[in-house]
Length: 175
Image (tube, rainbow, N blue to C red; front, top):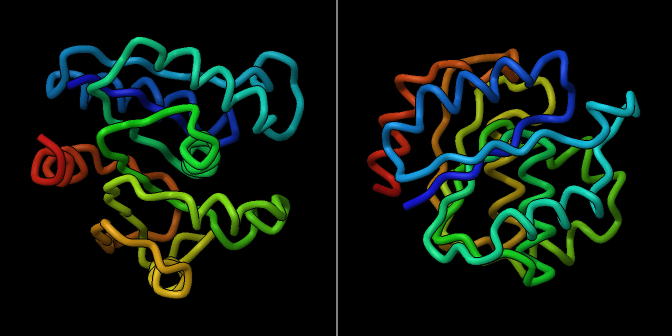
C-alpha cells in the first residue's frame, strides 16, 4: 500500500506538517508521496483546485493500491478528484476538514460530496477553528456520506501534529 499526502493551504503553516507527516507515516507504507501546491511557489493566497486536482491525478497514474492522507484544502481537492473520476484511492484519511467556510467558495461542493463514496476516516479536533467536530458530524449526517469512520480529537488549533496518535488511528483504519 502506498500513501499520498496533501497538506493544508498555507505554506507557512503546512510545509513543516507535510514533511513531519511524511517522516512519521512513511514506515507504514511501501512508498510515500507528498504533494506541495503550485501557489506555494507563486505567492498566490489560495490553492487552485483545477491545477491541484490535475497534479494529483497525474501523481496517481499507474497506481492502484494507495491511500490519501489529506488536511484541510487537501480534503476538498481529494473529494473533487474522486467526484470527477480522476483518482480512485483504496481509502482516505482526512484531518481538519474545512467544509464550512471554504466550501462556500466552491458552489459545486455539494455535487462532489454526493459522488464521494471512498472508505474514509475523518479526524477532527473538537474546536477546530475552521470546522468544529460537531459541525463535521452534522455535515456528514446531512450529506448522506456512507462508508466512513469519524474520530474526535482534542484540540482547537487546526495543527493535527499529534503524529503518534494519528499513526495509530491510521494503522487501525487502513493497514
